[in-house]
Image (cartoon, rainbow, N blue to C red; front, side):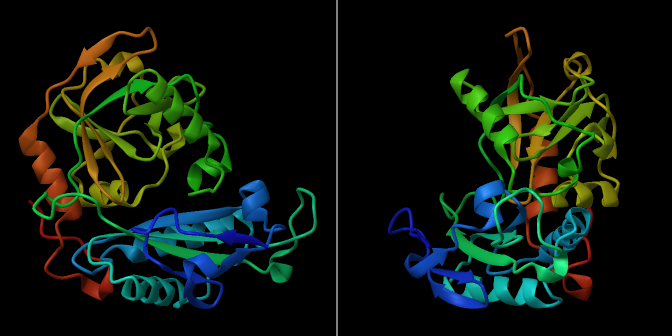
Length: 306
């Protein structure tokens, strides 16, 4: 069995593993687990703000849909939220996030997985506290310089639709960006349409309209993206390097925060500076990351529009 140990003393010490809470440094992962060996599983990162996980139901629904696409068992009803809440409370997380990992579990060697009824899935939830000044605006990240990576996003793959543990394409793209002196990278699909960044959806101000790449171009169905679309604050629209040059502003958004883009580098190595529309950034940040006063049905509602 492979032990799982905290990276440092600052890492919260309790994790949910299997059917309950355990000290993180006592966990032992079965070396035959398909998540470890093959990336055969899903994950969700749930934001905690003021001790609440306001949009966890969206993550639970996305994971349920992902399990259906991958023909693997889903977490039993109620267990997703119960395990998240227990992990958050045990680690006293007021501001931070919870990472839920769900693998198909241990199995014999080979690519073909056991049938869903024979799977013994592995559940792991770890907690992280936010790093940064308490006075900082929730969800707002420092402006970034991004590039268009050589690594492509396969829009035709089923993996483009799920939060898969198989994240190597994103890892390669992020490494490429860092080696080029950029903070992050955009990945285009094999037809040249931009899909998303390595760990966030793309929002672009094109003319007077905020747009985001459609799912059929390879964008992950992000939870923040879904909320913006549902509220009508953003519309879907394909984007290429050529049309990106016409953007009046760019943002990267995910469940944890919004990153304004100050410049982007194209495939020929040319850098394009961008304005930082502070008013739009603040409206998006407020809508996505300030805690709403009420949430109908626990998590399905939307905050008052700005």
